[in-house]
Figure 1 (cartoon, rainbow, N blue to C red):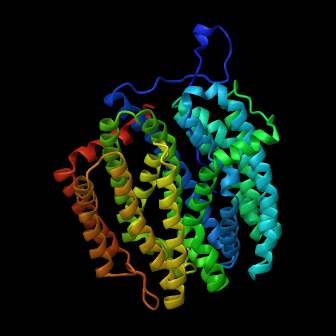
Figure 2 (cartoon, rainbow, N blue to C red; figure 1 turned 180 degrees about the horizontal axis):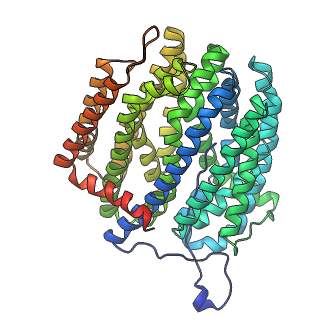
Figure 3 (cartoon, helix red, strand yellow; figure 1 turned 135 degrees about the vertical axis):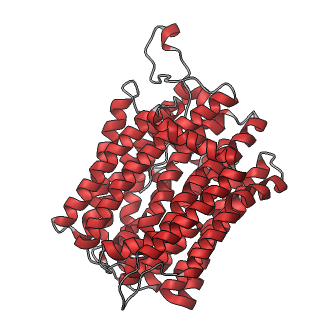
Length: 519
């Protein structure tokens, strides 16, 4: 369900070499602090534009699907997402990460790595069918195997998109990446709603996934006309590359497990309807994390990789950009916590009210959780796969533990709160670890967290203490004015604080937003 782009660097100059190259340079690497900041801002601006378009489409489609589909259909979606855990490393085999780190040898290594990605994706297709058989035998949700079998067709295609996007990212061609993503999103949601309206039910997501991935490949191929992917790779070389990339592949699996491992357990511990509510709530909120995480990799992984030997500049950009991104997310999440429950109730006429606890719990911790994604970019840009692996093992193991304990003690609500706490702790631990890796003192990291999240935590806690359900009532009329006024006051306090004490981060955030029209 996610796209993970990569990066690389042009190795030949078309003008001086006098011959065509697979890689074309659309922009030079940032040479100083100012240009690197502009590059990051430009990348995040295009990402923001893509995010806005995708989220509008996503919300519009979810409004329609909330009416068109039964609650337990979302349990099928949740288990399809869960099945993807086992093939995440095959459809996103980490090739893009390697191309980023070895950008100076891109023309040399691209044929082997593109072939490796395609062959691994093909193996992933077969493995996914095996996973589908296992899921069919484990979970009492139908139709599961044939849904998984249909979705399996997207795996080799998804592997191809990572190669295309890697080449485009190294050239800082964020505009083309974002335009392709917006068109892919439009096609995906049109198919999603159309299939649901025609009665596809549990097959809806799989149909949209396969169709949109085909369109995405075509768009990316058109955007890189000089790039040719290769299938040519000897079995011996394939095995060598598998051994070389074993930690990257394992990391991809662990990342997927850390993101969606809760569904793996909750599919057995909750009813189909409860799992449907749980997945629906996460779909409303967690897509923000998916899109911004993708944007973080698109815009920041190339930049941080270029700065890996300039640690003072990398430290500055890590804190500055992290602060700006979490500030944007904090503003969004204050609004989501404040008026999200009322919107859920009004838009779907009470049908999805049980998902409100998921929306509020996850939105409340999302800005802190986002710092774990930023930390992951630092580990990958430094080639610190050992540390990345440690954090992913912790993340995957802890989410399984929290989901199990939460569901055992408190059922649906207990699982929701426990998983939200896991997301919170993940950010609090992973971000400082990455900071120390590049030489940021613990005291400076603690100051960063205090500046970014103290007032955010206070205003969110105040809203929840005032009314945990934020104006949604069962037997009385739903209150609208009060949560709107409380949310407006919370946003005013938060923005006033940041204007007074975090002016640099506010300027950085506004710079990203301004550049969306001047990429």
